[in-house]
Length: 143
Image (cartoon, rainbow, N blue to C red; front, side, top):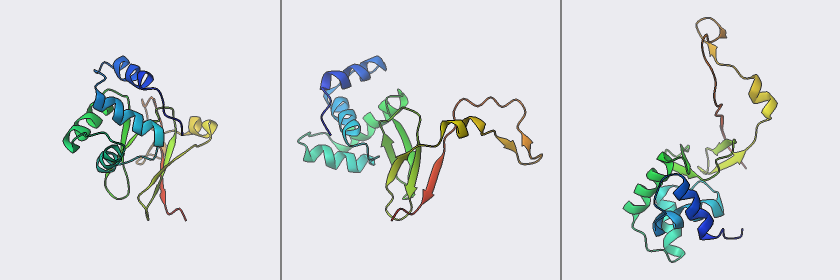
């Protein structure tokens, strides 16, 4: 996958109200380039291999700041690790219980529109619930 110019990545960080430090730009560029939902440790190793000398604590802190600012999202995989995703467009995930890997997947948007929260006590749609977003995570083995 082609590298995104660092100015584009830096602009995205700045638009979120954060200072586009060298570490933040490298972290976001790496997440956008591979899109494989790495853990903070996996990302730190990847950044080091690419020649970025960023301490693990700095990687952890900046992932938290990028997630809080809405530049990236975080999710927990079947291995219990917090993983990070730079894809902000609506999508769902498939979590492999054997490898711990997370894949981006799509669910038919028309089907998503039909989903309603049901009150388990009544079996009827929950009163007063206004759904803003539906998050679906598939869990299973991918062979």
